[in-house]
Length: 481
Ligand SMILES: Cc1ncc(COP(=O)(O)O)c(C=O)c1O
Image (tube, protein in one colour):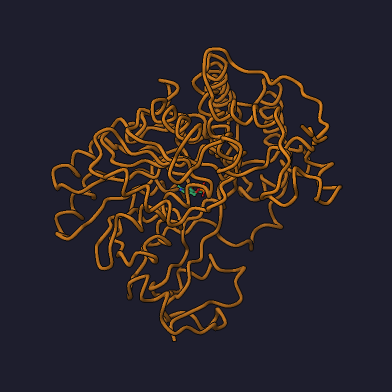
């Protein structure tokens, strides 16, 4: 039989960890080693029909592997079958969940799906003010109404702090038609709330709890990190594996806990409504790979080392005059791998640019006050030492901040005044007006700076003078007519 010449690629054997099993990675490897003639999508046909410069840049192998579900015995995502189903099952076991779903549109798709599947028009959702915009977008889709919880404010740092359990209880007492409590833990900067107490309160009021743990996916793999909400009574938990877990950008997981009030099949149906019908095998295999890596001896070593590096950096920086690190207090715990630092005399934005331009260091984000550094499982000892040395050099130099004084303010810590339900506002007649005329009008759009994606304005919110410093870069705002 004709055996077509298909793809001439060097077939180097892929290094695998022998203490863990990654079914999707293995299926993809098999697919790669047994090429077929492709009369199916994607049309670039293993990279042959793609802009050559792009192929050169990312490598042919990545393009050969860029396939979707359905083909070549790789399984399907919706419904989950074959190696994809097996990989999701192993992920559920690794994280201690009843069911785990792979997301290829980030945690955003997870939040949207939960809102769509589990909330209804007119139902109330207790949500923290600093939630990610995708939760609010989910409420626009479903018609649910936010009931705001305002977390503690860490005034000295201009950061949001922990969510107080008593505020959740107050909101539940005041609203008898709450469908869900939906909170973010940890904050972007790593501040951890008392999820155990919050989940006990939710159980007392018989209201399910969703925790957007986008930034906490490593917690299940080292006891020196906070405990995942999956083990503290949450019903559903979302993890952005791509943020810190080692998978590729856009890949996340949604877990249904073992004690969940939610029906996993119902959640799956909601995800299926919103997720792509051509999920990238590369993204899904990268989730399988990240889970396997975190479970493997090597991955556990990497994580242990990252935590030790983070502790080392904190110790060193706290000794340098002019640098302050956000540390855990008796009021709140902290994910130590997220290091928020302030440098005396420099705004965070200025420090960010000095690090970038003069030291070739890119930080996770910068606010008016400081910068956020993520100590990742892939960082090396050399990088850690270079970072410390660079920060020490900056602290001892005479960098000026004048250029940045008029910069836009970064992190809104306002409590929104909601005049209309987000969904009603979004579908109202709208007009676009100059920002100067917007005070007193009702916003028709979500405005949120990413990262961290916390809203400055959302549909249905009254625009006030207090919003203005956060909107410097906007000339026009969409408002209700
Ligand atoms: C708390 C939180 N939830 C959800 C998201 C959305 O995650 P993704 O980028 O994976 O869609 C983010 C993104 O920054 C986030 O910070």
